[in-house]
Length: 301
View 1 (cartoon, rainbow, N blue to C red):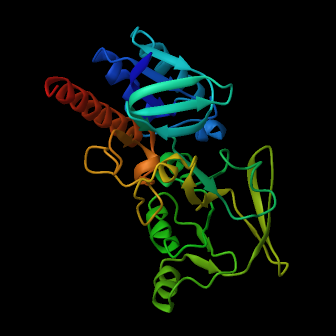
View 2: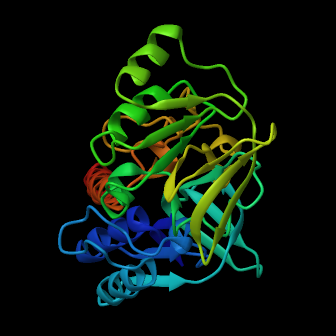
């Protein structure tokens, strides 16, 4: 069997793409390794009708809806390799299953690389986060820290000031702020610390203290830390896709990559902003284009 479309990735982009294609009566292989990036998150926010939903509940509801459509097949496995063929694409899973498809949507998302700081992971998703729009409300008016090794820390600090006026900016040993930026932050009561962070200290997932390598300690109740993002899987590059400067798969306005028949949706394409509602919308849009392209090819035969 050759599916009309294979989708790698069962996040909001892949799930919404499968929903749209299922409703369009397209045969779809939805391949998901059941390892969502936001699994550590206590709840997801900013998605109307789903504000505060847990990642597990979001996936449960999504799969219940998607699999109502008989032409969508869910394969809970991991794809090891993808190749371009004369009919479209050939995929092999970890268990050796071969999947053939005319079109392929990469909704594989991104992976975060955080600064290597002791004590971070027990706190991540509970009191340390990376997206103010996702978790700023829950940390409102608390004494917060912003940790980043990127010049974007200045923008993040200004953004967070709307949620809490008690901010400390930590560049983790990197001198990335200009004197003018430091002066502006200082004028708003925002402290800047350039020392290298030795450890985050806390209990039961709640941040209490930050310890620096010079022995300095500060008390904080939560905060935001900026990761670097990389492709979760290298399939786009392996297939020869052109990539963006940020490392995303370059697409046109409709999700088409530079490789014929290959599409990218969600974080794998645009990287930021990394939110459920953006990814789901992108998956929906991309699926509509896949359906339109399949329809066009049929009438051109």
